[in-house]
Amino acid sequence: MELKWLEDFLVLATTRSFSKAAKERNTTQSTLSRRIQQLEDWLGVRLIDRSSQPVGLTRAGSHFYRQAVEIVRTTYRARVGARRVGLQRAETLRISAQHVLARHYLPGLMAEIERDIEVGSFILKSDNLDNCLDNLINDEIDFMVCFHQQTMPDLVDLIGYDFLRVSSEQLIPVSIPDDGGNAMFALPGTAENPVRCIGFSSENPLGWQRQARMTTQDVKLHINPVYESTMGEIIRDMVLDGRGLAWLQSMLVGEDLKTGRLVPAGDKSWNQSIEIRVFRTRATGRSLVEQVWNLLCEMHLPAHTSSWMPMSFLSASTRCTEMFQQWWLVVLRS
Image (cartoon, rainbow, N blue to C red; front, side):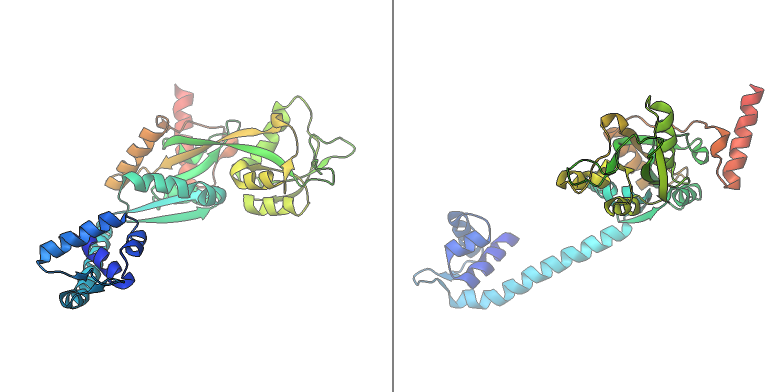
């Protein structure tokens, strides 16, 4: 006896129509009729009175209906209970990410993981990069997801941490449009009329994009910084409010560009490519972390180990400063 036979019977008993029941059960009328027949054969009695229209229940069918309802309910309650117990045994996966990534990238990554690995629950911390770093260094999380740009220095805090380049993203200069549909705040600006710019504050690594662009673009950039924030969502709101242009991630402003709420503030030569990296904890002994890391390695590029960076980007963390000093002594002696 199969559970779907009982479910078919209950729907048929309610609708009193084979065609309506088949439609509700998302099957053909002949298939539903065959399964009702199989249920009756298994019980050894007729449940459906097919001689009347609409169809009705036999005396045995009416008696069995109440029991069938309880059987189906009990079965599904038992499944929920079994799953709850199973998930309690499954491990929790802890991930931290910068605000934009937590909102626009992590849901897809988590779905990829759950397709192949049983995860009891996720703990997601959305924060600025400094706090995400502290969480990783203090072994409060298993993975950290962050942006990285080639023109930015590597993070000294993460020397020796394994990471994967899991995706890439574009930083696009955007502005609200003027009445003609062109950017109200357009690059590169002039010395007499520098363009108003809203940017990431210095503690956000994407704040390096402005300095990097000024040194890599042949055309000199003339900007007037008017506002800074660590959060891309706040910067986007300021741009939509008409306060200036900003370089923002395509995942954040893609829909705005499609609808015309925002337009590029320059041609594609002003776009900048950034990476999305996943760093893993150094703590060992958790099978779930190993499973997820192996899965990510299969899906993306080979894992890397973070390299050194210039001394101008040292963290305030005493532990990381000591790590850097020890490494630098080794380099000088070699």
